[in-house]
Image (cartoon, rainbow over all chains, first blue to last red; front, side):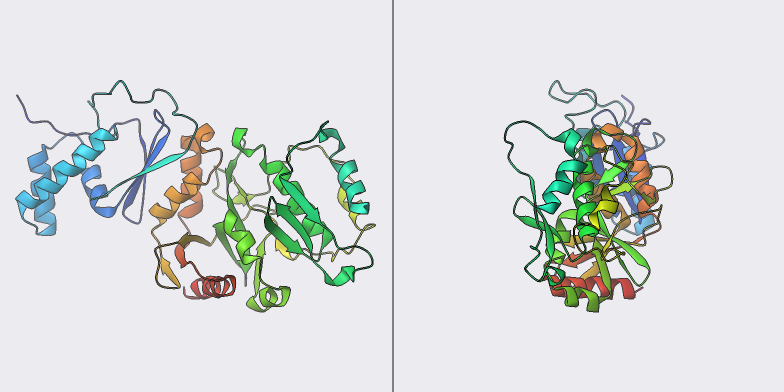
Length: 111
Length: 245
């Protein structure tokens, strides 16, 4: 089975200010705010690299041990999947449909 | 009683039968109580939203609050619960609920600080330009409503509070940071954008339009977190942060 290459959903509205991504999901009505580390990982999720390749790139760029970076990347990807920010997510039966419940929500992903 | 008559005439078409729980109340000094030296006060439940010597300012603040009751359901602009203050030509946004806290200071303290406090707890933002703009009025009031105020009590001719009368860019956005241990510190614009979203009452209705408009507002600004302190100190910190650039 080929390794997955994570890709962010193309229907999200993403803005980046001061190295931090703010992501609006029109489907759920939720807003997500990522710190700089999570933003780096998020923006690299373009569907062209496996998790190992992505982690190796980050480790090289920041001169960090590759295995430690991979642990952090996998943690972040789990958070992204739980927040339904990646393509190919399994949507749970409990997840809200449509425009959410009318309340503005912000979630923060920590890297 | 004269101000009651003004209220009745101005908002007559919105009068309801029976009793409702009062959300707002107004204190106007009586004619025999040195009325030129006492504050007119607009309360929201038990919070003093605006304290002002100028009756026109109080009436505008009251009208703005009445208008704000419809913001959640509107999609003609972005409506965010922040107020705009000005100092030395700089326009800054502060959380709306924080405005009444700052307003506790005496008139002379506020004047000495060089800050003009917000007259409203909300700003209206044009999503296309990201500028704060006057709120499109939805309430129908008599055209001469504010002209008649001068017959009732003191009006200074110019307000001692900030009202948005024309499209204006914002220079600084403040947030009250309950974790801060320094008077003020820079905040990322990404963080402030996410906070403004939570305070935008019609964000769910506008969705993507709101986030794009708020981004246009925040992008050119400087952002600061303020340490929680007493009103005087926080006002000084606001001035210091603005001057720090």
